[in-house]
Length: 139
Image (cartoon, rainbow, N blue to C red; front, side, top):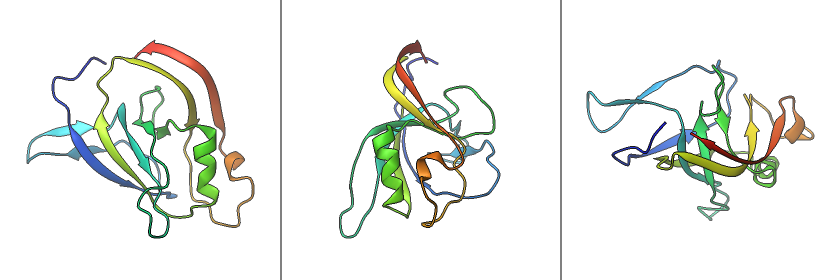
């Protein structure tokens, strides 16, 4: 909830799955250090063809909005809609959020489970994208 004393970088390969969403602890930088995934900032990578990046953007993943047993990602609707055209893995280059304030237009993608290319209107299936206005709160 405050500015971290040390910046930490890590990479997470994320994919859609029908497995139950549970909290996890990631061990980074050695045998003992552990960090619970919560309130992270990073960049979302869409690999497509020979291009490594289609679009990069700030985002947050983890339980930063409250809630339990769910995965939250901050993504504008326009970019989350790209998923219908890119049926593959999305990769996060994640770094610890350094600012105690959050000020952005947020769309939470809530508990997105397995879908396939035949799914119509993927933005509405069956989980909701909730669009918030500009928010300025202490993290």
